[in-house]
Amino acid sequence: MTTATEAAYDTCIDITKTQARNFSYGIRLLPPDKRAALSAVYALARRIDDIGDGDLPDDEKRAQLAEVRAALENLDAATDPVLVAVRDATRRHPIPLAAFGELVDGVQRDVDGGAFATFDELVGYCRCVAGSIGRLCLSIFGATDPLAGAAYADALGVALQQTNILRDLREDLQHGRVYLPQEDLDRFGVELRLGPDGALVDDDGALAALVRWSADRARGWYDDGLRVVPLLDRRSAACCAAMAGIYRRLLDRIAADPSLVFDRRLSLSTWQKSGVAARALTRRRA
Image (cartoon, rainbow, N blue to C red):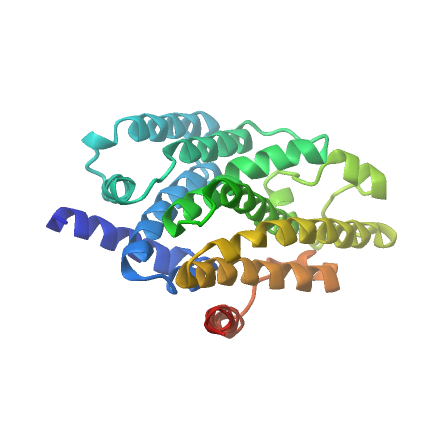
């Protein structure tokens, strides 16, 4: 590995340490080579996400997303540290670069806006922005059954994204985004809106009921997606279980008290995340 490539990985590892508030607890359980490769994947995925979540005009966001697509098609010419690390990682692992293209598609959907009419539409979006990440991770983990593993990793990504959606209901609405499908809002008679205090309005408990129901549906996706864990080696399984465990615990807190997300961005404490990661590693040793 050249000095430039090592420096590129160091950049990605630093990005992961400072910005991967949940994923970093799982990534640190991997051996150094896989940890570096997954940090490169995370750093590029984070860059793509940040384009969609930033404050630039939509046309500029679209232009930057197009630049990412072009860069992925010409990785051999890359000089940007994140892209250099991704290029090296693709030479060491069977990373499906097309999955990054799916992530760009999902972020493009965010930029273009528009509500989701049905849950099936939402699942398609979740597969782009999160299922793609699951499949990228799997390519670095390795699996005894790659085909089944890819399906499970995709499902796990959908589960994590549904958790994000419930956690970020208020924040997304503040930015004019609604991810809960209209058919679900109609089912529970919910009109998402903010009150004078900036908190989500819960008319007669309808929103709380919808959140609990949505959380229960997400648990089914976790049950399916976590079937990937037995297909992985011990350290990769611990990484996957830790990342999923943190989000699953967050989902359980939301389901137990939906009002926790009505006026804040809910998160687990550092010690809670560390505890989930430690248990994930211990279970694989048992």
